[in-house]
Image (tube, rainbow, N blue to C red; front, side, top):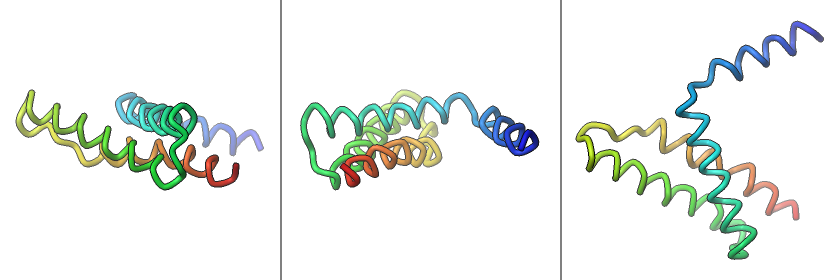
Length: 89
Protein backbone atom coordinates (compact mmCIF):
# COMPACT_ATOMS: atom_id res chain seq x y z
CA UNK A 1 0.00 0.00 0.00
CA UNK A 2 2.87 2.35 0.81
CA UNK A 3 4.38 1.79 -2.65
CA UNK A 4 1.06 2.68 -4.29
CA UNK A 5 0.75 5.88 -2.27
CA UNK A 6 4.35 6.83 -3.09
CA UNK A 7 3.69 6.22 -6.79
CA UNK A 8 0.53 8.37 -6.71
CA UNK A 9 2.44 11.09 -4.88
CA UNK A 10 5.19 10.95 -7.47
CA UNK A 11 2.70 11.25 -10.32
CA UNK A 12 0.93 14.20 -8.70
CA UNK A 13 4.21 15.99 -8.04
CA UNK A 14 5.28 15.48 -11.66
CA UNK A 15 2.33 17.56 -12.97
CA UNK A 16 3.66 20.93 -14.17
CA UNK A 17 2.50 23.85 -12.04
CA UNK A 18 1.08 25.62 -15.11
CA UNK A 19 -1.16 22.66 -16.00
CA UNK A 20 -2.37 22.36 -12.43
CA UNK A 21 -3.41 26.03 -12.47
CA UNK A 22 -5.27 25.53 -15.75
CA UNK A 23 -7.08 22.50 -14.31
CA UNK A 24 -8.09 24.42 -11.18
CA UNK A 25 -9.23 27.41 -13.24
CA UNK A 26 -11.43 25.17 -15.40
CA UNK A 27 -13.01 23.69 -12.28
CA UNK A 28 -13.60 27.08 -10.70
CA UNK A 29 -15.21 28.45 -13.87
CA UNK A 30 -17.45 25.39 -14.23
CA UNK A 31 -18.38 25.60 -10.53
CA UNK A 32 -19.26 29.27 -10.84
CA UNK A 33 -21.64 28.65 -13.71
CA UNK A 34 -23.10 25.51 -12.12
CA UNK A 35 -23.71 27.01 -8.66
CA UNK A 36 -24.12 30.76 -9.03
CA UNK A 37 -25.73 30.95 -12.45
CA UNK A 38 -27.51 27.60 -12.19
CA UNK A 39 -26.41 26.40 -15.62
CA UNK A 40 -27.36 22.90 -16.62
CA UNK A 41 -24.78 20.14 -16.83
CA UNK A 42 -24.21 20.53 -20.55
CA UNK A 43 -22.97 24.07 -20.12
CA UNK A 44 -20.48 23.59 -17.27
CA UNK A 45 -17.71 22.21 -19.47
CA UNK A 46 -18.72 24.54 -22.31
CA UNK A 47 -17.95 27.58 -20.16
CA UNK A 48 -14.59 26.06 -19.20
CA UNK A 49 -13.84 25.54 -22.90
CA UNK A 50 -14.82 29.11 -23.77
CA UNK A 51 -12.67 30.51 -20.97
CA UNK A 52 -9.74 28.32 -22.06
CA UNK A 53 -10.06 29.51 -25.67
CA UNK A 54 -10.19 33.13 -24.54
CA UNK A 55 -7.11 32.64 -22.36
CA UNK A 56 -5.15 31.01 -25.16
CA UNK A 57 -6.27 33.68 -27.65
CA UNK A 58 -5.03 36.40 -25.30
CA UNK A 59 -1.73 34.53 -24.90
CA UNK A 60 -1.45 34.29 -28.69
CA UNK A 61 -2.25 37.99 -29.09
CA UNK A 62 0.34 39.02 -26.49
CA UNK A 63 3.05 36.67 -27.76
CA UNK A 64 2.58 35.09 -31.21
CA UNK A 65 3.16 31.35 -31.11
CA UNK A 66 2.11 31.00 -27.47
CA UNK A 67 -1.14 29.12 -28.18
CA UNK A 68 -1.06 25.83 -26.27
CA UNK A 69 -3.55 23.08 -26.98
CA UNK A 70 -2.29 21.25 -23.88
CA UNK A 71 -3.25 24.23 -21.70
CA UNK A 72 -6.64 24.45 -23.41
CA UNK A 73 -7.28 20.73 -22.92
CA UNK A 74 -6.23 20.92 -19.27
CA UNK A 75 -8.63 23.83 -18.66
CA UNK A 76 -11.48 21.88 -20.26
CA UNK A 77 -10.62 18.76 -18.25
CA UNK A 78 -10.87 20.84 -15.08
CA UNK A 79 -14.57 21.33 -15.76
CA UNK A 80 -15.35 17.62 -16.08
CA UNK A 81 -15.36 16.74 -12.34
CA UNK A 82 -17.85 19.58 -11.79
CA UNK A 83 -19.92 18.29 -14.69
CA UNK A 84 -20.01 14.86 -13.04
CA UNK A 85 -21.14 16.38 -9.74
CA UNK A 86 -23.92 18.28 -11.50
CA UNK A 87 -25.07 15.12 -13.29
CA UNK A 88 -25.12 13.17 -10.01
CA UNK A 89 -26.95 15.94 -8.14
